[in-house]
Amino acid sequence: MSFTISLAQFDWRTDALVQRLPGGQAYLEIQTAWASDLSASGDSVTLTVVVTRNVDVLGFRKSRLEVRPNVQDSMTLSHLHVDRILVPDGACVVEWSIAADDELLHASNLTYRISPSGMPEIADPMVVVTHAKTSELSDPNMVHSGMDLIPSVGKHIALDQAAVKIYLELHKMDDVVGQDSLFLLAYGWADAQGNWNADFTKYKRLKAQAVVPVFESLPTSTTSPDVHLPMLKLEARTKQGEVIVARDVALAPRRHPGREESLLAKPSPFLPSLDAFQEVDDLVRHMHDHLALATTNEQSTILNVLVPGGNVEGMKSYVSGFWLERSRSVAEAEARHRQFMDRVDFVNEMYGDCKQGQGSMTEMGNIFLRFGKPNTVVKRHHETDYYPYEIWHYHKAGRFNNKRFLFFAPHVVSECFELLHSDMLGERQNEDWLSQLKSRENRLRVSESMENRLNPRDAFSREEPEDLFYNPR
Image 1 (tube, helix red, strand yellow):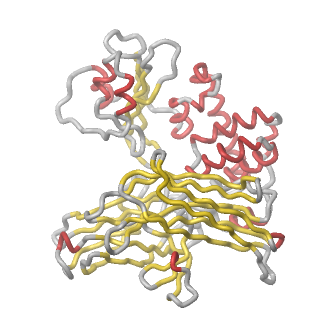
Image 2: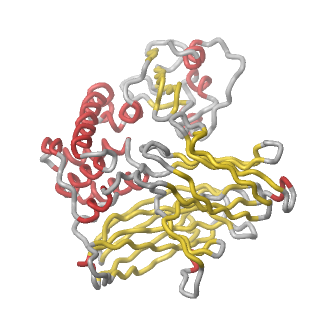
Image 3: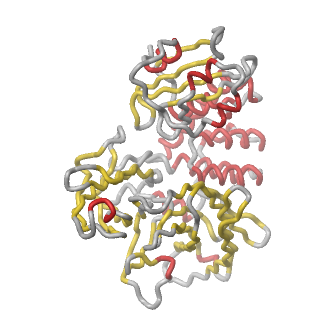
């Protein structure tokens, strides 16, 4: 969701897919979508896209987007702009900014990591809204394998869809099984635990080539894929069943039937629970509270558009839309927002002392807002051999079962506890956590190890923190 209430262009969405040319060169397909109403006639905005690595600019596009709808009996129109920028291997950041004259309408950024070329790979899949055969009118940036593909930017799937079209490309399969040899592609939705959902999994036998395009349809229901954490699972296997390459792709939270159109037509009314916020400073703090639950695009909108703008009505409208998009009714959105406010009050009281009373800005508060109260908590604040630490254990955290979070205070006194290690997918995973918990001169090593992945152990060290982490009680 984007904050563009007062203008004729609104509901900005951004995404980029990592793709490859047949020769192996990687590129980003950078997608920007928005809606407009009839008052947009003659209006235009400037879209700037920059791809960077550290201080180096890898690619740059600046486009003038003209919007002159002239369609009978239509109050809103959907628009799409696609750029393609070649990128080298390694990490990069894509930044979007959309402006009308000198007014910033939308800003967002996403981080990507380009894998080295020459290895078997499943390129980023595309959720396709509609498709057609290529013609002389086709935009080259939207052509894949002889088809014009219109993507659902952000990979949104509505709850009322009976099926979803997926386009993807597999690379270098022939290097594994041989040119024209058969291999198996499994594709389907994940269940609540992140495993294959047998009722929504399909299989397709394909001939191996340097590039194998796949355009298939997957059935859906109101519960599969998951409403809040939809996940597409992909796996290429040899005829003997050996896995060549696999990946799980997170999609955007699903939209409820009819909700999108009503949100685009006019701003949603404020939720009654927002009456508690009258001052700008209070609303700004509440916007920061939402960062724990927000998607990357939503976080960027909050930090780069809403908070700097300081508009009370705009922030209230955004929070209302935030909860409406995650609910089936206004009543449910109101109830969920009030529950969230209660959680915010709790984390402010429990963890806010080190952050000017704002517990949501601490790592403990962030985890609590996202997953709720842990099932068990081990506190060791006065050990002599280790930094003060806590271990939180969840029977269920989001879609995953049996997850742990280890926090510690590396400066010991009056400091926010930091997340040192977790076995939760997407969280900080640090194979050196036990030694760093013992050392009092290793703060630099902690930051350097954030990207490390857990190395499971068969034999434990018999030290108490490790025993408590792997055997919560």
